[in-house]
Length: 394
Image (cartoon, rainbow, N blue to C red; front, side):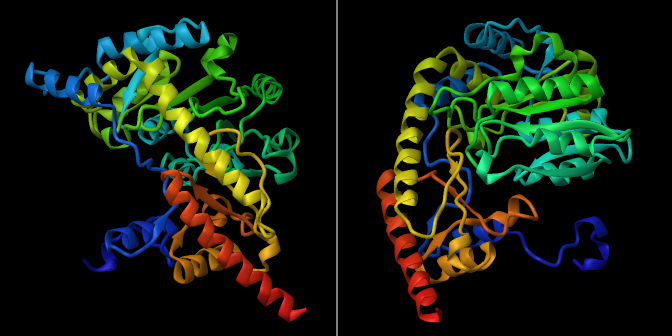
């Protein structure tokens, strides 16, 4: 198709590294892929079997546009058991992954030109989601030296009459940082004083290796200004099932439901039945998956700390590490490309997660330990070569 038919807002000169990663993987290149947050684990067999059985028993039609009632009851139980918080079924909406929920929520609350503050580095889709919903993203830099805690002073400085919301993500993609309870208390105070909404992306809540995670669901007195986003993808190794959910004031969910009638009407019925089984067995499943990734992150941090070029901060949660490569002497995109071409290891450049992140790369620890060992051996070889080049130039 001629490019003249493509919307101007989607024309880009540079292909994203995400697209390059997918293309190379499909082409069958001999690479170790540490680029995407799609774990190598398979969904638990009991979840798959129960979903298939429910399909045979008739769960193959459209679901309730708000979500399967039994599943919403299980989500209510989940937050009661894990966070001692009461949520009503009217305050839950199932979506086709957390990204879908984020976009619907943004579309439901934003007027044209209203601003959404996004701490940087950030999960790449936030920027485009805000724009597609008619808003304007405003970025506030979080500091490496502060373990990527939200820069509250910087947030206060950019708030104005157009500011509508702040998006936070903890545990964090791409840095693996977890926002402290103290930071979140101060952030909620800022939101109250300025009448702002807070989008809290908590899809990595189960990947908390130092018991630091604090959910915004606990701020019950601020419930009407909180839009909580979650997903079954990572917690239960269900990325391909495409299922997430939003917890928010039912008036916001009403608008989201109306918007979604023109998008996909409801989340997949079979996926929702699978999620019922997942939540009924959540303690055991979550423990096994989180324990596996804790070992991977521990190993990755050990290898990076021993590398003369790499510096790390964060890494308390999720399954990503965002090392600073300033000592390499080259920028992130060149670093990632050379690492791919010379050693066959695929990582993402930091500028995919913020314009000021050219001194960082993101490593997704989504492969087994043997594969990670191989990858870090190759990374060490690559950075040693860079060190030799630097030494020769001095």
